[in-house]
Image (cartoon, rainbow, N blue to C red; front, top):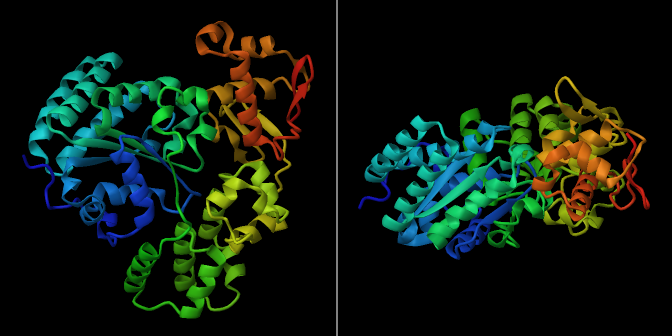
Amino acid sequence: MNHISSAEPTHFESLYPPDSRKEEIEKIISYIKSGNSAQVISLPGVGRSNVLRLLAYNTKARTLHLGENQKWFHFVMLNFSEIKKRPLSDSTKYMFLELVDSLQERKMDEEYKFTKNILDECIKSEDELVIFQGFKKTIDYLCLQKELTIVLLFDKFEEYVSVVEPIFFENLKVLRDRVKYRFSTVFPLNRPLEETVGHETLSTFYEFLVGNLVYLTLADEKIRSFRLSYIEKLAGKNVDKNVLNEIMRLTGGLGKLWLVSVNTCIQEDLKNNISDSLLKNTQTKAVLSEIWKSLTPFEQNLIINGKVHESTHLVAVGLVKNNKFAVPLLEAYAKNPSGGLGIKRTITYDGQTNEIKRGEIILSEGLTSSEFKLLKFLVTNPEKILGRDEIVNGVWGNQASTAGVTEQALDQLIFRLRKKIEENPNAPTHIQTVKGRGFKFTA
């Protein structure tokens, strides 16, 4: 059987040094080998997608970590931004399509033809159940008959969080139970799934994810050196070493921020006042804004007040090193009065776009469907004391019994919402508890 062709698909990451992100990939592989799944956690722009693409497209990297056994591992790259806000049926169909296409891309002709026939028959039915049955049959064939380990790489999964439901993880559990150790998933995220979607949504698949966290460092020397050589070759000139050192100091080497800063310095021929120039640059500000928006109001407040060491998350993702802030450029961006970054903004619901915002920041993009429904109800009933039953009936109506909205589940939702919108979740100013009566929302 011809599992993997020696010809690697044309992807930029296939050119990366095979020992790029070596320690982090070793951890991911260790979880996969044990039949578990992994979560890859980092700030936006650090390089989660690069890690996944190294696994999916770089044969030398796979060989470094798996040896000759790499031919028995099939990594499938899935970009969940392509099905953002789409229903479960579309996510199943998308995973099915991408799995089949990945077999063709890696020249696995026999496997491709067999699974493509299953896919074509299922798509004709346009029935969600039939499509999932076909997906199960395909996984069975690849894992049990062809003895492959299938690893689904869920890139940009945070963009799918707003519609994800428990059944998504229940279906993953079904697939894993059928083929045991030969099925794994990798979730790249801004923060762990437990915080993002909650234990109740994850419950069925939680045993395969719990504790399996791989935090990416801000910088990877192998990738940085490779990208610098590539940039200098395209530009036709070398970047001044003093400029590079200053960029490294300002950005902490944080992947995308470092890359954009280097390109900006080349294009604008910057030699002096680099920090001020980068803070005025549109591209640099866009990267800084993306990082800033990924942080909770509590974490933002700690950065503004110079107390970053008080957050375990900021330490874990590398923003704090030796009790000091590791990305001075982000710190300067946060403290810049002209940036309009004050976090004490009114929270509002926009009925035309169906979005919940704080100022210009769209809070609803980082909320699960249950969190969104709850916050929308609270925002549209400001300053009212709302009892638990009133909230459950107002948010879930007659579906309350099937949605599993117990008193404990509501408390967990309130807790997660506070962590996502409050400057201090332990002393909330928006979602306040009125002892013995319920909750009150203040915008």
